[in-house]
Image (cartoon, rainbow, N blue to C red; front, top):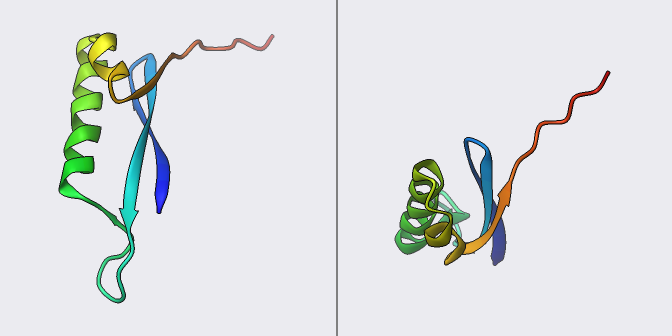
Length: 69
């Protein structure tokens, strides 16, 4: 089952498509090792400010705080 995971790091966030694996019993649903490593790579890229690297895996957003008077 295809899902979008949101990875947030500092003032940036990225939407990354992953495949959730569903199996009877056990810890389902879960991520493949490849998808888990990709999420970690996106998180590290956002932390390091490497938006181009993060954008290779999904949509990147800059978060802006909203002040409400």
